[in-house]
Image (tube, rainbow, N blue to C red; front, side, top):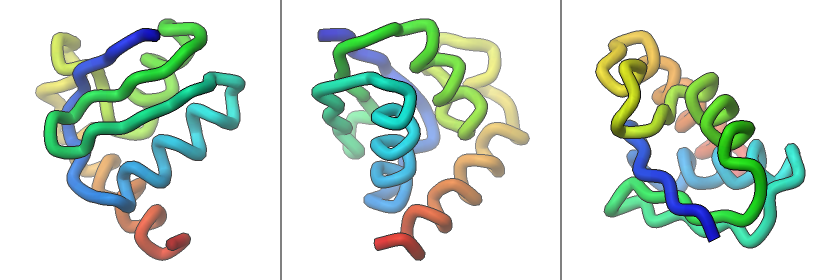
Length: 85
């Protein structure tokens, strides 16, 4: 199982969007710890990082983690996830 520390996860809406996106590219056994901003899964780590970064949830140790644009993008993803609940 792979563990990624990411940034910008705020709520269940974020969790829902991340779960949908990662399962949609074939990753499995996905678990998301919102409080600790961690994602656990089985599958391709590179693909997961690419998807998460595009969504606004980049790995905590990446240069994108400090990006205001990525933070704003994560809010959009979060709101979409809340409306789909």
